[in-house]
Length: 489
Image 1: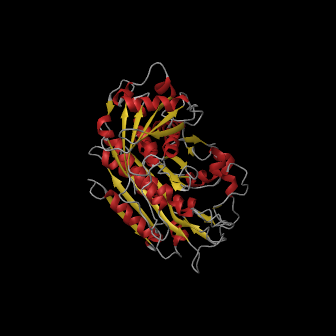
Image 2: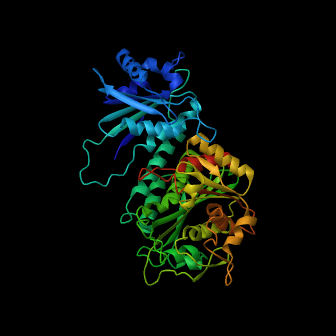
Image 3: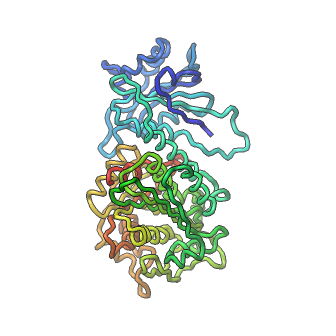
């Protein structure tokens, strides 16, 4: 486990540091208008930074290099970021910052320090989150490094002034790292019951938070046949966790709904050819929702916020739900199962309907590692976004650019996509007929369909790609969702 702290000044950042990484744009580090934040470094460190920069070009994704120093810190590295980014990237160059962290190996041993020389003070949140993304909490190895490594981070604005980490920045960093830790936990340590305990732990002590759970057969009494059907044969019972928080005079009600499949075998539509490996991460959406709720409840928001964690293990056993089964969802609609490996939309269908019909939320946002096709549609670093209206879509895209947790809109066309779920014996099937017809959009539309007859606005974030980076949980989602809620409240 790597400890991460926020330093208030450059001097505090460097105190006791073994390794230093200086991060900034090429213009800030090599241009005539040198960033004033460099003046807080000793002449020797400034000299080494200048020497390293002579042979370092950022390219499109950033570059880093390091060397030994004759004084503390004993190792100095510089990460140079491109001056410009594309219009679909974050202005803070968050991914380039994370990449430079990894290349420089900062924070993995001893006492690390990261100095962020920002072009814009508004980039602090995304830049700090990018640093945190490179410093995972979970370590399941038998031999743990002692003393535990630590890393400090500090931002300096373009005017040379130190930027203190606000409560939103610190809470967002903590939520990102906890979400990544949950994704990294093996399924032997994180089943639905364990996830419930983690959720209670992470919101414990936050004033005004109320939590309840609907577990096992009680899901059927509550109308949640999707969650129950998916998880009914696992050793740990499926459950719907509902958490709420509200300010004194709430402005509207926004619900966040997360897919929490703690392990996905594919069910009787068994994942084969090694594709089951890594399916511990199929609860990344619930981890993102939990992190966003924790951030909002601890830092404040104008809106009432609810978080619904749809938790189940898609296991195999005598009581497993089967292809050709028909399940009754919370909306009252009946779904014919034609692919037990399309289970995420079933649990989310119950979650979003419960949010709109039972909790009366006016805006419902869900997050899920829903489809492998999302990676084909929008890639590994942009989550796919399906939004029922343009204003909501714009708010989520803007939140992504601000936090560095990027989303890109997918086609929204119910008239093209609902037909893919046609059934001869039920209201619809759970998997598409034509997998080449924008299946990620279709999957999102399946969930949105459950809101028919309500006035709830709907947004869907398919984060199958960005939920992990290099085989580790990325902590993607909490900052994106929390920022989106603030913009929509």
